Each structure stands twice: as C-alpha cells, then as structure tokens.
Amino acid sequence: MVTINVAVLLAVIVVIRLRRRTQARSRFDEKMTVLIVLALGILLAPTPVGEGIADVLGQLTTGATQAAR
Image 1 (cartoon, one colour):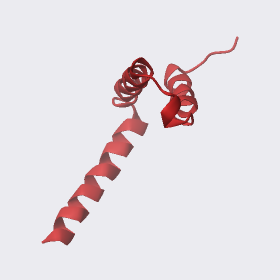
Image 2 (cartoon, helix red, strand yellow; image 1 turned 60 degrees about the horizontal axis):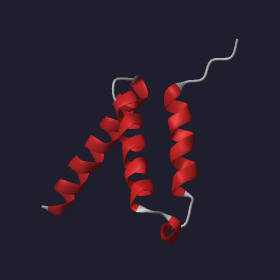
Image 3 (cartoon, helix red, strand yellow; image 1 turned 120 degrees about the vertical axis):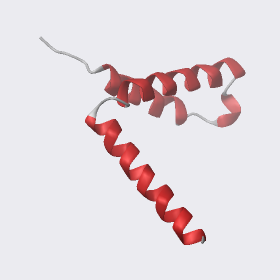
Image 4 (cartoon, helix red, strand yellow; image 1 turned 135 degrees about the vertical axis):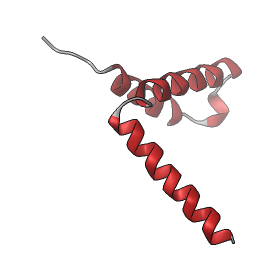
C-alpha cells in the first residue's frame, strides 16, 4: 500500500503553481494558490518540521531586530 503525505502533496502543488509566469495567472488562480499555501501552513504548523521553521524564523527576527539597534 502506498501512502501520500498530504503536506508533501500540497508542497508539490505549490511549487508547480508558483513556477508559472505571473502574467498567465488570473485572480482566481492567485486566490487558489493562497488557499493552498494556507492549508499547507496549517498542516505543517503542529509538526516538528513546522516548529523547526518557526524557531529559525524567530531567531532570524531576533537577529534582525538586534542588528537594527
């Protein structure tokens, strides 16, 4: 039996959609991409990968605010 992780599937869809040219996208297409990215974020947030990404972004934000002082 083959199982497909929904987060991986959404990540592949996002990459494919974002590779298209900007001029070729309609408003509906852009809204759909935003919804897919939001769904991907919701799926990744509670996982160890999502927590790792949040930690890295938090460190980058802290570093940027300290460098600006």
